[in-house]
Amino acid sequence: MPQVMEFKLPDLGEGLTEAEIVRWLVAVGDVVAIDQPVVEVETAKAMVEVPCPYGGVVTARFGEEGTELPVGAPLITVAVGAVSLPEAPAAQAPEAEGSGNVPRPLIGYGEDHSRPARRRRVRPVTAAVSAPAVAAPVAPAAPAAPAAPAAPAAPAVPAGPVPVISPLVRKLAKDGGVDLRGLTGSGPEGLILRADVEAALAALRAPEPAPVTAPPAPVTAQGERIPLKGVRGAVAEKLSRSRREIPDATCWVDADATELMAARAAMNAVGGPKISVLALLARICTAALARYPELNSTVDLAAKEIVRLPSVHLGFAAQTERGLVVPVVRDAQHRNPESLSAEFARLTELARAGKLAPSDLTGGTFTLNNYGVFGVDGSTPIINHPEAAMLGVGRIIDKPWVHEGQLAVRKVVQLSLTFDHRVCDGGTAGGFLRYVADCVESPAVLLRSL
Image 1: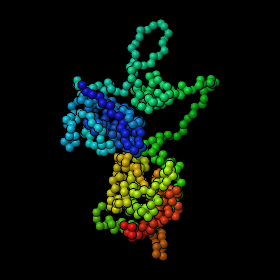
Image 2 (image 1 turned 90 degrees about the vertical axis):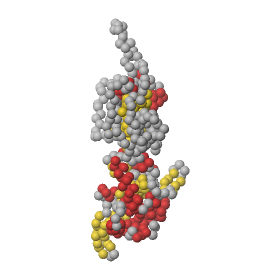
Image 3 (image 1 turned 30 degrees about the vertical axis):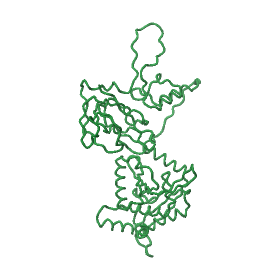
Image 4 (image 1 turned 120 degrees about the horizontal axis):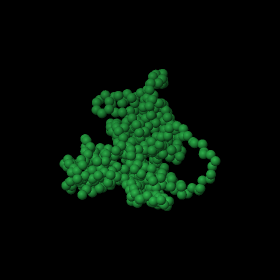
């Protein structure tokens, strides 16, 4: 007989407690292989395809697209052994497995696993398991009783399993003394949601309403309401926290980037991978941070200490369809412009495809924000908490500039530095920004630091 296995939303790391279902990749009745992605979810960090550790027939799905589920809530159930599965390719088959139907630990989160080109649905055969048999539980209807002239009895509490999948909802009901069997869920197929339990708790606590002579005037909500969740919600929380906790200040300077652009053109003229402007600015930043390590630090409020960090994990702002994300280049101080260019390109491609892992978006120590790509000259960046500073770069455009005593048209860029005033004073911040500007105006200055 087939064994029905329940696959729950796994812990996706980085302290994440919930995820939103973006897109189901399988339907009830589909045959899935071990480690085949079954659902695409969005966390506060990234978009992730979640692979299932079981192979068999999908007998139930829990949650519609757009639903948020806590870690540990059921995602799907799979009938293992309900159908013969094709053997996995030799390169992917585990050594100790004799069949593709044997459950094994979940692997490969965030990776791009291959999936079948077409879904395979189970034909009605004797070994197949009926999907409704393991779908989200709904209390069965009581058998009909013969009609009687007596007064109707009070409704009985339904028997059978309670349609609740969230352990948080169960705990909330238990702590508040709410009997879940007496509730009618407002979710799909009668699923009891947190809002249902909260409404029951409010009814228990509410006093008897006073009689009113006329109904209150209806309140009409104005405007479109957009939930702050997923990536956008995480960004909103982080920016708000930055403004609450960090006493920031901003300084800026215009710089003549003509020589920097000429140096980049010369590098790219010799062949090989192209060097980006962002990579050159990143290399300048790492050299500047070596001179001014105060800006590569964080503040430990609990210990009342400034922690200077040994490595530069350089974040860079990337705009995607799902909002602003900040991928992180690890140990940027050890990379040359060619390596930085390649890593920026790799992370940007993953960000736009929504395939960044949570580890790609955390652990930054300093952020480089090139808002010049939006056609603007200047800005006052908000520090990416818990970092201590962010360098903003405007567009590089032709402007009149006094060069060697003569008015000339030069390529000019505005650089702005927002810094945490707790880690340094204006002299340190100004020294950092001036060194960056000097390297932009004369890249030979950077050679002294290499």
